[in-house]
Image 1 (tube, helix red, strand yellow):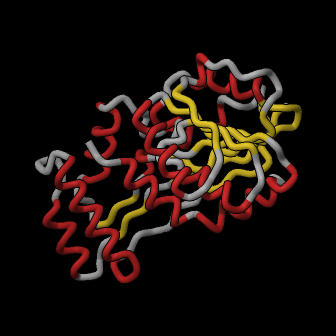
Image 2 (cartoon, rainbow, N blue to C red):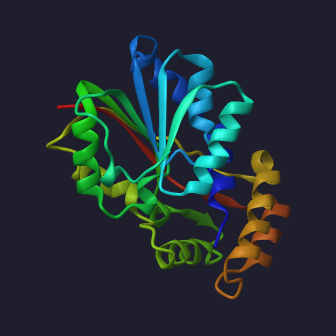
Image 3 (cartoon, helix red, strand yellow):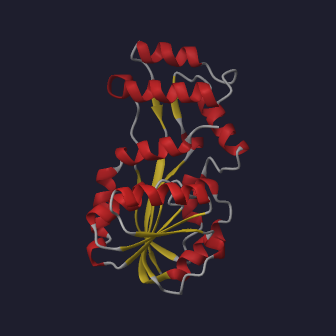
Length: 242
């Protein structure tokens, strides 16, 4: 399976400007309590903690990730309360948080309706819910077609993820949240601009995917001849509690 944690941290660098705009639009400087679901490496909380004076909370079901994130934040002098916890079995008070954020979280979570119910419960009136990025691997555009899209899709599905979650999210929040903004934060990958990243990702794919299911040689040839194109849509949503 692919090292999605490494890719997650890399993706954060691509969309930093977008997040800064959303933080300002959501008036983070006037908020008090913020929770990240699936805080993983702690990078998002670190970014926010450097820029804003918020009470930061993070939860993750994986104890090892909580330990990693805690060390990461402590090293960077960011104060946050991190808890090994499932949002479906939490003890947060009603109407406690001003902001809840997620990134690449629902890709791995199947209990969408129940999770949104809990987020709605713990958010204050007019509280902000930022879904900062959910990929849609069913919407990949690759040229030339090497079979990579199908193998990525199947690899995720076999691992228990929903590869098309990005496009499905809006159907779930209509009765609990009001959409303020929605966006696609992706950009096309082309060798003349992203050659190093493409090569690094290809190395990861070769190690983690079934190389019999896609043509890695054709990818290399296409990158070298400057003819490769890869686009993975990543959808995001700025929501307010109804």
